[in-house]
Image 1 (tube, helix red, strand yellow):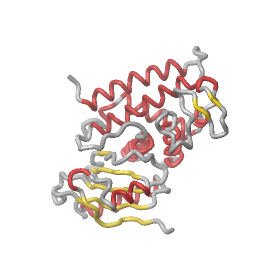
Image 2 (tube, chains in turn orange, brown):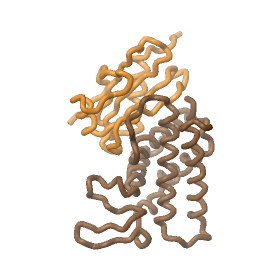
Image 3 (spheres, rainbow over the protein chains, first blue to last red):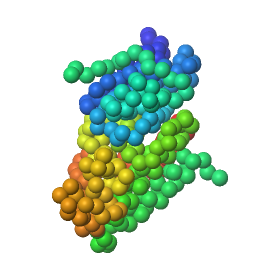
Length: 108
Length: 165
């Protein structure tokens, strides 16, 4: 019998679900907070979608959906240009969040 | 005094009521007016959700509908565990068009059509919103358009679905 999935597994499940829902997503990166080991800290994903509005960093918070998604989650959707500005430090993620593992990268 | 997220949710509900009055068959006003209220309603619905997160958010004004609403609808759909799979990309595209109804969301001057102010096209033709045939109005009659409106109305009338999560 499996236990509660860890955050890394849930991040991958969420990334897969989001890619299925929004096939135009080009990249999904996990975002790591300063208290990532806490179960109360949401799983955070940064997603690059050319279809979204270029309106800056707008975190969208969701509650948990157990049993598949037992943690709260936060999604930040940006355009490719906004993503490049985040990488260069011109746009800053909130709360000291940092880039983590790339969970999906579309083939060019 | 209500929290900012609650205040946005209340105003979104009021904008929805105005949108429904303007959409009724009894009104013969140009479509720009109901599209104006549609854009205002959905923008405030999205801002209610974003303010509810209590996260430090960059100042943002317009253009949030495409960023937030398709994800709210997708998450709500996921929570219901329905078998079907809506066309969320089409919903995203529609939301982007609704964002563009605001005069300040013009894709760097490439899309000046909006529901509030007259504009001049690249060819020098002057357009008036009250006499313009906004194609997005027709797209709202499609299946993804109907789902978008139905889900947004549901989320607006039941803000507890997302507020406080």
